[in-house]
Image: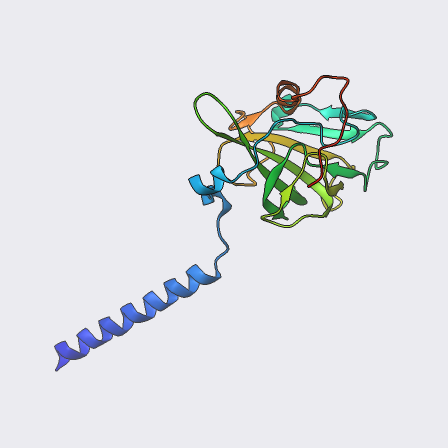
Amino acid sequence: MSRLLTYLACALGLGVLAWGCLTLARTRPLDPAFVRLSPAEIARLPLVVRMDPPLGSEHAALTYNAQPFRLNRHLGDDLNGIGGLNSDRGDPVHAAAQGRVVYAGTPGPGWGKMIILAHRLASPSGPQVVQTVYAHLEEILIQPGQIVTRGEKIGTVGTGGGQYLAHLHFEIRRGPYVNPSVGYADAPLNRLSPEVFLQQHRGAPATQLNPAPRP
């Protein structure tokens, strides 16, 4: 009898433990570090044919780069309006290229509101995925899963919830992993120089400033 009671107690304990684990799995927020675009999702990403700066005009007129890529371990560019201080707060932020919204939210302290767009690049070795990141936003004007066009207004310049003077933190990332991650690191990780990348993939003469065709 005592052995039977022991077995029943063990079974009950395992059941409670399993229920607890399932409950924890349902309530614990998803760790974005493990979100990866599937091959089918990559195949459906819009193909990039042209890229423009996300702030100012198609040539980034009336803007400047206050903290370039890798300065002070920085993983992106900090773009500002030429007025300085908070004069650019609320200015429109544009999609640098046609893409799909794979993240839109507030990932954690230091970031404020963030948007991540995923794009597909053609290459001889097969499709490549790049992501453009727009952070410290005042407003998010798009929804996850939405397809946006180059130059479309997707948000506005903010202060990261009052943590900084107004500016746009802009990154270019390579690869299919969707992770807000960090803005500073000793190594560049999967980040690329936004300024160089936009120049390499502008896809139009310097004199061509037309907006993207509207669907």
